[in-house]
Image (cartoon, rainbow, N blue to C red; front, side, top):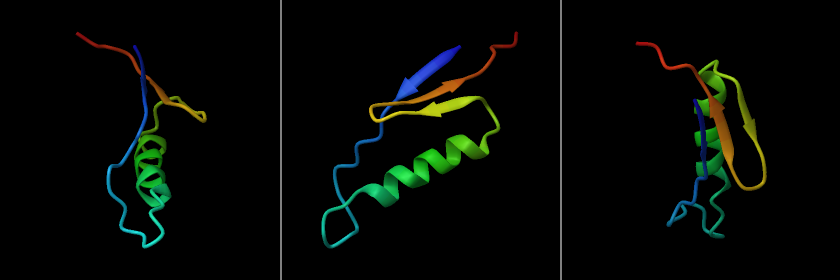
Length: 52
């Protein structure tokens, strides 16, 4: 299974309006999952197998 998603926070904790910390946190969770993944300028792709 291949999943592609993007992170687009609607609010920012940073005074300058930057959402980079929220995006970095989401990417960190994906990378720590151990599943194959790829982050591009538009999406983060996550690959895994479905087990029944």
